[in-house]
Length: 612
Ligand code: F6R
Image (cartoon, rainbow, N blue to C red):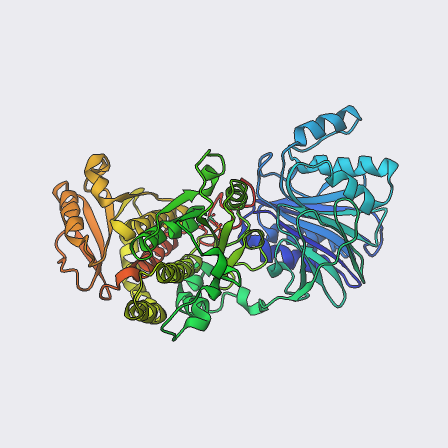
């Protein structure tokens, strides 16, 4: 959701800006733009913007033969004002250009104040107020860095900004508060971006800015200060991300690639415990031994697919570790006056680590007095990871497709480890049970690989779904969240309306929707709820509904007219949801392929949801 690239170098930085923006495309956007200073023939600010894809901006750049040594660039996901060229960033105020990710909550007050001073607004964005505010500050404080520092002191809300001015062609200024921004130290210059992916083309040496940091980038140096102007040192890290991690390879889409990367992602996430028969607290951080002590309940905070991972984990933590668990949609929890127990382990789950609601919910839980916090996250150094006392980084590798796949299965792997650790502490796990669970966990990559072999058959099923406008997903117990995840995947990338129900709820309402036109997808493992589920499937058949059943090999359901069966491997016990979600992902992917949607960048959606 919105991406920023800033570059100042001894070379032409325009190709760096364009390449950086295309590496940020996966975050989701609807327009793109850039502004540069220090071109071949002029020291004036040049701005180009395009509604639509980065490729359209690149074409404009090509036509204008733009070349410069200082610039800022942006992909915009509309919040204030429609997607249009006029609302696209950068926004300019007489030679000062600004790109911004986040939301300025007091922009109306700022706008009114600036209008009263004679500033004319041409866009509907909150960002334009930042540009005019910096320009206004420069009337009394000409130094660009100081003017930015003073201006951000007046901003309320979340932001990461990049600023340049034509009067100051030797530096760029950036600042962050509640939205991601990191700096890159290159051989030919200095850079900043919303994530590392944008900078791998020029450097792997990065500095993660903290909230409240303001940085000045020149060709040779970086200077960082806090809001009050005090200088601060931030450590540089060598990113482990390799440039080829962002390449598609032999796959048609990143989503397909990421579905097929799951065995490797799970192995990488298991890391040190792969092949081991026991599990220890230390996996969750040095303080885990103390913070897990006396935990009486677990509160999971997350959004979307990560929320579904929490819903599965509730079944595990309650049944195996004997702990009561609540799983909360972060955007709801953060505004609810709930009852806090300090003996709660708060688990924030997020692929990106930047989801604004999850971050805010985590902070809120801490404010309520729950200090035992754990982040399960795929991005080290992300805001959520830095906010939590404990962390477990899923090693899924970069997830580029907007629809989350390998992040989900690796989150489940971490929850399984957490369940075993807490069960062990609670004296609820014998040595032989621990060994049995660990053996199953370590065998998961092989088991997932086997399920992936179903792809051709699922592709054939997808042909039948492609013409549908609605679908129902059913599951029971720990597979109910898998039905929810299947429905979410299908709707977000194929735009087919899909709903998921706990199968026992069918006759309490949704059964009224079932007729021969409604495909019903059932997640059907051979577990202790199978007989109950079979009765629910009969209810569908009796109303003429067409059933598509993903059944464990040992489930004993036979195919018949209007009851199609996809045979999964044998039942995998507690970890069965990890296997059953894979055909849900593949089904959504293949239906989207048939329908010709933009699989990796579904309409209206963003990868990192950095606004609430
Ligand atoms: C769905 C999907 C979203 C995310 C949600 C939370 O495929 O990707 O529902 O799961 O936006 O994002 P993270 O996990 O980054 O906090």
